[in-house]
Amino acid sequence: MRAYLDWNATTPPRAEVLDAMREAAARAWANPSSVHGDGRAARAVVEDARAAVAELVGTDPRDVVLTSGGTEANNLALRSAFPREGAPAALVTSRLEHPSVSRVAEALEREGRARVRWLEVTAAGAIDLGDLDRALEEGAALVTVQAVNHETGVLAPVAEVIARAHAAGARVHVDAVQGWGKVAVPPGWDTASVAPHKMRGPKGIGALATRPGARIDPVLLGGAQEKGLRPGTVDAALAAGFGVAARIAARSAERWAALADLRDRIERELLAIEAPRGHARVAGDATRRAPHVSNLLWPGWIGAELVAALDLEGVSVSSGAACSAGTVEPSPVLFAMLGAADAARGVRVSIGDATTEDDASRAVRAFRAVLGR
Ligand SMILES: Cc1ncc(COP(=O)(O)O)c(C=O)c1O
Image (tube, rainbow, N blue to C red):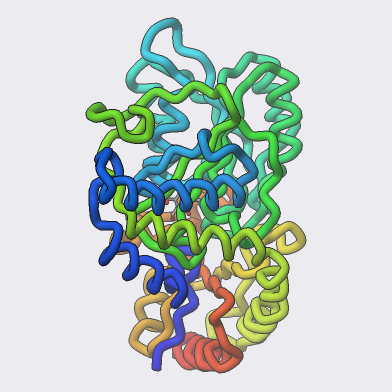
């Protein structure tokens, strides 16, 4: 039996999600853009999912564009804020962001469409609001901020960012992929991303939600699906799973908050391990953190080595973002927070509402065995 403590990478789909997907795949397989009855049946499934996503994020279903996932939603949001024509305007962001934001920012700069203003980052894993004020005084077209950090779980001051950016006339994108269903994501953004595989739904689908009237420019060109903003045939089965996951996520923040007890127990026991090379410390502000994440650094250990050794003991955790795993590249997030010496040390433990006390015990035992070597 393995213990899966890597819920920030992805989450196990719920039984209700799989049931809805199976049912839609068998019944609503037609092209949702077809005007005949079969197409309309598939279309109804997609539109029901869109309504569920709109309700989760607090917008109108007409302002939900379905995408292939969180990465595409972030690409769409950032590129839409920097039209090709005109002088490059400022894009304000930080090195705490997921690569699907920071690498798009770098690309927009290379393409001459944006000037990136990287905000100062604190050792506690937050952006510096004073520096945000300075950046806004210099003038900005877009501020992009994540709701919950994917590596440390630290909550960004989203409401403050929105208030300050809007007062300065800048648009705000919130990468809330790690937030929905887990913490309250503040309203008022211009665009926000959703990825159902982070909330017990399917992979391969996601959404960009917008406030009414926010301009979106398609990244892909093709047919008229999603009002031409995201061409390509939509899969009603994925949409059905997305809809069910969104409806459950909309009422799960309280259940998620209760995970803090289990996370704190795991963290306490890991911090107490008498490892020969020394005790761990926690990365990120423990007082402003999502309830299910803990990122720990052990002296003398590279995170990826610890993760590989724990894997052999049947425990799944992660070092840095899953998308950069396989390479021992230091984490840009930990680099921005703590500097080069600690940037490859992080081990992320992230749990969810199917994690048991037994999983926790098994994981702690494995950490003890590996760290004792
Ligand atoms: C904060 C954040 N944004 C965006 C993404 C990308 O989402 P997806 O995997 O759906 O493309 C992730 C996934 O790890 C993430 O953690």
